[in-house]
Length: 304
Image (cartoon, rainbow, N blue to C red):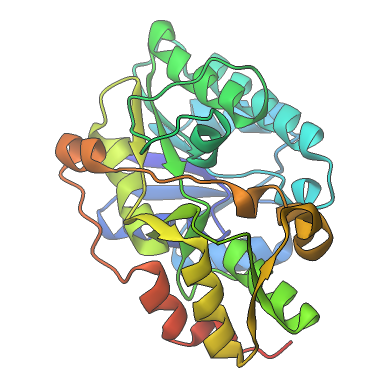
């Protein structure tokens, strides 16, 4: 299968592309810079020079492919507080893919996050069957992708947990928390730190994207979750012992000042199951869990 992948040189893409190539697929990766192009070429993928805002280019690349995996997202805009523009750009790209693939029966794999379930206030372990219709955030993007089933496309969505971790992770939430702990001199959690974050290994996520492309039924919502829910205090303690800094509780009213853009997120309780995904596709998490991975030390190799 010839597969067009956006975000191909990024964190998760760096696992998805080798996974696809090893399974015999051809990969065309979107690259917006010389650096990204070099990374993709080194992995053995064909390079397609364009960017997320080039809707004509995205549509042409999708139409020429046998399937599309959409990983790209303007994370830099999100970090600087311009989440709205990142969401709008994502929706425009998704709509472009829908137009290019309509009526073809080709697979389209989109990306969402499990944190949207926490924001929905479920009050229990989230599952793949949980759907929120509330407008806003990545909920709109997820629902738009699933709606492609009515347009003659085979869509699925992979919900990533807040911590997708591995030695490939250089800019995700774990490196952000490490940078905050280094800057503040303490590894923090909010309140009692009993709120739970799910987690998944990057390589397990890469494998799931391939399975979704190859065989996920139209309209599938999938969870790339290995750890169902790690108490946030456990995460802070793992960071503290590896950085050799104190582990402290941060008052809820001080969370934004301490954690910055992560302030609202570090307080969310987001236990999430992947049992339906495992049963549907035969996918099984096979790599280390979050705390074990943190304790391997690779996150702390760069002192900067």
